[in-house]
Image 1 (cartoon, helix red, strand yellow):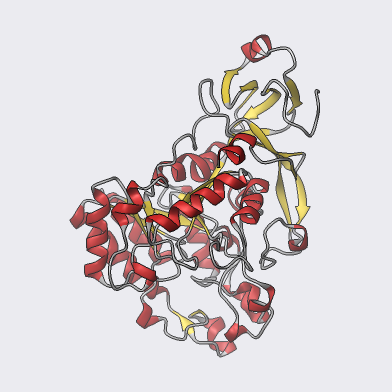
Image 2 (spheres, one colour):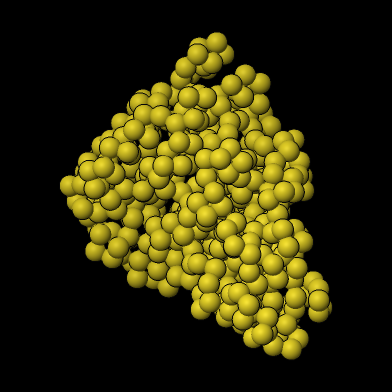
Length: 450
C-alpha cells in the first residue's frame, strides 16, 4: 500500500475484494474521481503507483445522500457549522447532504443559498446542497424567491420550511405549482399548528402518566392527507419529512396507489426509539415530530421496507448543550444523526431481515439523490460512474459516544448504545475523506476552487 493516510500520488485506488451492495465480491478501480473498472479488469488496468486497499469483509456502497440536515450556518455557528457538520457527514458515510433553510438569516434568497453552497465547497468533505425556504423568513405568509434560488449557482431543487409547517393551503398550493416549472419539490414539515400548541411529546398513555401536553398523531396525518390531495390537484411533487405515525404510512400508501407524486422519509430515531424513553424526562429525547409508540415504530419500519416510505433522512439537528441540558419544557427539539444513521438502519432494518444492503443503497443513496436532483450522487458502483463510494464493515460494532463525534452537537439519543456497522473508508469524488474510520483530508480540488 503506497503512502497510507495521504492521497495517492497518481489519484488512483485499487479496492480489492469488496462485496458490492452485499451481493458480489469484486475489485474496484478509482482513477481521478471516476470508477474506471469493476471486476477482474480492475487489477489489470490499475496504473503503477495506484494505492491498494484491502476491502476483504467490507461492503462497498454508493456514498450516502441525506435529504434532511441542519448545518445551522449562517448565524447559528454555536450549534454547528458547515465545516463541522460536513465532517460529521463524511464520518457517517455521506458524500452529499441537503442543508435545511432554518439558518439565520433564513435561506430564502439566492444570496444565502449561494453562501451555503460556497461554505460547503470550501470545506470539501461532502457535496453540500442548500435547501431553499418555501416562505419568506419561514413565516408562512408569502412565497420566498423560489425561482431565483432555482436559477442561482446553488441550483436549488428542494424547498422546505422544515421546523415550521406550510399550514396555509392556498400558499402550499401556490408553492407546489411554482416549483413544477423547474422540476422542484416541496418538502413539508407535517404539523397542524393549532393541534400542537404547547405540545411536549406524543399524545398517548405515556403523556397522560407524565402530565406532559400531548402531540396527537392526527396533527401530522391531517397535513399529509391535505397535501397529497394538493399534489394530485397540481400534478407537482411533494416530499413528506420525518414520517412518524402508522396513520401517516396508511395515507401515503393510499396516495401512492392513486399515482400521486409523493415521496417520504423516516428518521433513524423514529425507526428505533419510542415515547417510553420520555419517562426519564431527559431532554435528549425531545424532538419534532415526537417519538411515537412501539406500534408506530413497527409501522414506519414496515412502510420503509415495502417502499411506502422512500428514504431515510437524518434530520440531524445539533444544539448547544445549554439548550438541551435544562428542564424538559424549556429544552430545544432535535437530535443529532449523521454519524449514527448507517448503524441504526443496519440495526433496525438489515439485521432484522426487513431489508438487504442493496435496499440500503436505494433508501440512503439512489432515491434521495433522485428526489433532490443531485448530479453525480446516488449512482451505481459501476465503471464510468463518479467515485462516490464507501466501504463498511457490517460485523464491527461500537458504543456511541457523543463526546467523540465531529458534530458540535452532543445531543445524540443513542449515547451509550452498542450499534453495528462501522464506516471504514469514504471516497468523495475519488478522494479518501475517511480512512480506517477516521477523518483523513478534505477534497483538495473542492477546497481550492472555492
